[in-house]
Image (tube, rainbow, N blue to C red; front, side, top):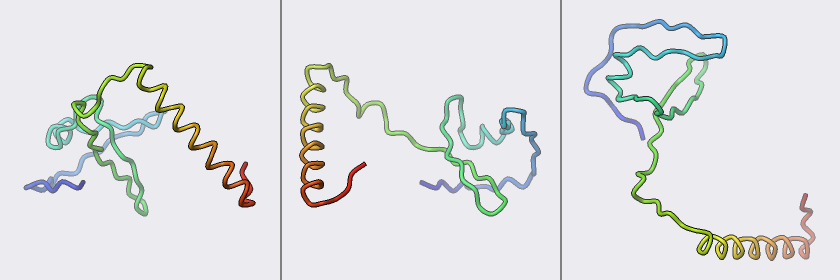
Length: 97
C-alpha cells in the first residue's frame, strides 16, 4: 500500500554503499517515514532508481499458537491431497519432475 505524505522532502541526501552493499538511510528520513529497527523493506528497480518501500506485516494478533496435536492432522491432510493431485496429474499424462 502506497502512503502519500502531506509534505515533500526538498533536500537531497547522499549515502555510501558499504563493502557488503549496505546503505544508511538518513535519520530524519527514517523518522519522517516511521522506519524503525527491523522494518522490512521491499526493494525494486525502475530504470536506474532503487526504490525502497516498507512492507506492512499482518498484526501479530491474527496468529495463534498451535501445537503438534493440531498441526500434524493439517499436514497429513495437505500431503494426502498433494499425493492425490500428483497421481491424478500422472494419470492424465502430465510429466512431473
